[in-house]
Image (cartoon, rainbow, N blue to C red; front, side):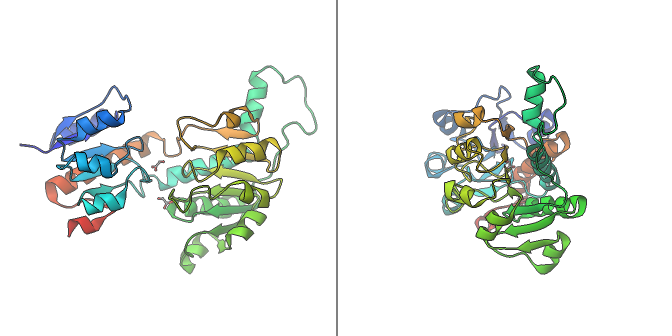
Amino acid sequence: TQPRILVARAVFPETLQKLEQHFELETNQADTVFTRQELLARLKDKAGAFTTGSERIDAEVLAACPQLKICANMAVGFNNFDVPAMTARKVLATNTPDVLTETTADFGFALLMATARRMAESEHYLRAGRWTQWSYDMFAGADVHGSTLGILGMGRIGQGIARRGAHGFGMNVIYHNRSRLASELEAACKARYVGKEELLKTADHLVLVLPYSAESHHAIGAAELAQMKPTATLVNVARGGIVDDAALAQALREKRIAAAGLDVYEGEPKVHPDLLTVPNVVLTPHIASATVPTRRAMADLAADNLIGFLVHGKPVTPLNAEVLA
Ligand code: GLV
Ligand code: GLV
């Protein structure tokens, strides 16, 4: 008999067809997010799970699902997985790196530009019928070209944003990361390594692209926002919780920084009510990787991890390869 798989959220019909050739599927095309109890009940008899950021896989889930061998996340981020607990239980974790890098970097850059040039705020103004005449400083924002781009978290996506800034917009790129990049990678994106304090103090536009962890929780809070230039903008395309949203809303309201662009939020899909009422913020609903071809590629890669591991013993992009040994 074929291994049983839970596909926890709705996905492309083509992805289900591919999985159906190897597995007995339990699907959720109605796309209701499972409660904790539903997740436990549905996953109990499964060998594998096709998951998204909405399913938290932790010690409690693993203890309740002894047959589980793999969770394949359709996301590059995997802070919904307790990877050490999965490794301890010999459950393989996989994610979807690389296939979304350029698409996500495009969106990070789009959000930077929309934020610097006040596109959301000005569109709301126009739609509200408030545009009555030209004015010398109407929605005057910050320049992107030639300015200093700061990147916190210099993985693949951070490097993609750096390349766009350096090569496309003549930006002076600085970055901070846990470890410094190899010099050829720094050269490819014309980026200079600096300490976190220098990054905060010098960036005209600061983009966050670091993974969420206990270490990066509130990496940008009131103290960090206070170090930024009053003309600076902040963009987060990484994860909610890296920014203290309450502190950010206050800094935006008091114009202690000029503007922010956010794709991710603490406790999303809920958004801090103060962020919804400040004008100088561009808000998008966690869509940085959302192009049709990239979402297809992510779904395919998650499916290939399930097939690769459960059918051939060889996953494509394992996060805890020690489970395979
Ligand atoms: C999206 O946030 C992802 O991690 O892929
Ligand atoms: C994600 O893939 C990153 O390394 O930024």
